[in-house]
Amino acid sequence: MRKGGTVFLILVVSAAVMAGTTLGLVRNWQYLTTPRVQKEPIPEVTESHPVPSETGTEAPVTRQQFPAVASSETGPLTGADQNLSLILTREEVQEINSMLLELGYSSTSLTEGLKEFQRQNRLIVSGYVDGPTLQALVRQLTLKRVRTST
Image (tube, rainbow, N blue to C red):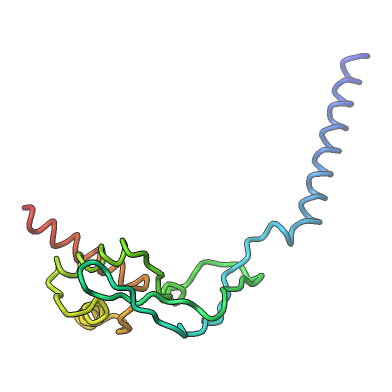
């Protein structure tokens, strides 16, 4: 086979591969898009069961009535999606309690300490650990530790 025939054969095979790839992407585009988290608010927590910790404080452990459902919308998460209560283990409850105590929030229960912290930091006062509360708690504790170390 001559040099021209080899180049032509390579070009034909390359064109076939590109056409097949493009056709495959177009036909499967619906499966390739990332689904967006549901925009509708998840129903409020229906039950709250306090979990006693070794320090004598209690923290609410929550269970949601309905599971989260994904929709076909795509896009970034909004700030409202972060306001979901977190479900904590006993160790996490103890850690959050010790963080609150280190920041000077010493109340009889973890829920009351969280409410006081949320009030003073202008957060939604719920008594539960949600995303913004945890971020503010970690930020305040980090600032305090930096100030005391210098």
